[in-house]
Image (tube, rainbow, N blue to C red):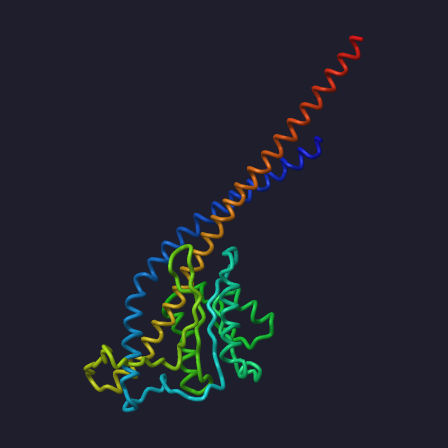
Length: 294
């Protein structure tokens, strides 16, 4: 009986230590989430408006403008940018992103994948490790990008996709990331990065954007397009960055709650075992006293 009590005590101490760690990690993730959330919330309206403007320009160009980044061609070579995290302990965040990327390959680029024409550009250690270990064709230049998360550094990663598309190294570029909604909700999305997607103008109630360009239209758009695309790329990374911290905070909060439930159950078991041991000892003492009295 004493051995059982000692084992339960050790388990209680172990779980209490783990609970302290999960509480601390939850607080750290909450602080990081606040900063990451502020960053994406400030940037998102600007990035969304720029994307709408870019799609309108491309959709309304009607072939009279040189837009190499919007060139539609037969898709033979594909680049998929998968934005995961560097660390784990964030629930199913990374596994869902990897599953989303694999689903895109399976549903849209199965033929290209079998021919070895699908390349993965992982951003984040978890995605990099998975795709390397599973034999995918991987560009390993920017998987450590979160160690220096600045616009200039992100622009270098985006340049791989932009220049690769212009040169014909890739015929399509997709980004797989987690769109941040709140701390408890992440939306795993796939976004066509290149070629620039065109939007259909509806016949009923659709407004066709008409822009005035100064100086020349071709010159201005050639200058603006890469900058707007760099902004879209940066937004996707900030979205995933905030989602990661939200997922980790939620996972650590749930782990702390589970530890509390387990502690409650173990303490009940411990108290019952201790009460049984005391009852047994008292019975033995009473029985011994009665035997001596006789």
